[in-house]
Image (cartoon, one colour):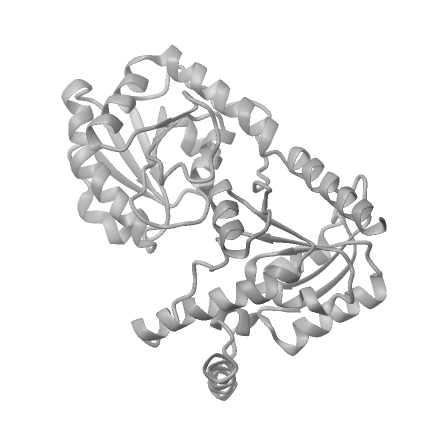
Length: 366
C-alpha cells in the first residue's frame, strides 16, 4: 500500500515490535504513534485489575476492549488524527471499533477478525462472567460497528454473521500472507501427514486426538508406513499420542523446512471460530490440505488444493489418495500456491484495500 499511499500508524505494540519498527529502515510508515503494551506488576497490577473490573462491571465494557482503551491509546489516536490529518482511517480488530467516533468524521474502514468477539475473551472470573462478557461484546458490536463507514471481515462466514447481526453489507478482506516465490516440492516427500497448531488451544488438542486415534489407523490400513506429525507449541499436552505412526515434533522455527518434510497437511477441526492461518500457510507454501468444513472456514481455495470431508473414513480416504499418488499431490500443491499468490499475497490484498478506500472517498464527496 505504501507504493500508492502515504501511511501512518497508531498502535499498541509489544516492546520487541516497537523496537523492530524503530530500527527498521524499510518501514512503510511515514509517521508512527505507538503505545507500549506492558504487563504491570505488584501494586500497579492490582490497581490495573481494579480499574478494569470497574469498566467491565459498572460501565459495561467488554474486558478486552476495556484493556485496550487506555489513556495512552486514546491520546495516540487523537494525536495521529490531528497531526497526520489522514484522508481515511483503517481500524483493525474489534477492540479498535471504540475509536470510530473519535476520528472527527474522517472516513473509516473497520476490519473485524473474529465475527465481533475476540478469541481471548475469558475473564478468569468463572462461566457466568464469560457469558456476561459475550453479551457485552454483542452490545459493543451493535453500538460501535454501526459507526464505521465500511465494514470488512476476514472470512465470508464472519461477513455473513456480522451482516445479519447489523443489517448491513460486510465485505471480505482476506489476511495477507507472504507467499514463497516457489511452492515446496511435493515429489519425493515421505509418506507423512502434518497437523499444525498450538495445543494450549483445546480445538487443536481435540483435533490431534481424533487424527491420531481415528484417522491415522484407517490410513495405515492402506499405507502401513504412513506417519502423522503433530507440530506446534505446547506439545506437552498431547505427548501421550506419540507412537504407532504418530510423532510429536513440537515447535519448529521454519515452516518452509517443516512443510518440505511432509506430503500433505491433514487439518480438520471440531470446534472454534476465526480463520485458519495454518491452512492458509500450508497452501501458500504449495502444500495440499485435507480438512473438514470447520477446518476450511474462511479458505476459498479450490479442490484438490483443499479437499473437504466430514467423517474420519472420508478424511482417511482423501489423505490416502494423496499419499499414494505423488503426481496428484504435486498438481494439488501447485494449484494451492497459485491460488494463494493470486488471493492472499500482500500485493493482492493491498490492491483490494486501496480500491475500497478510493471508492469510499468518492462516495463521501458526492
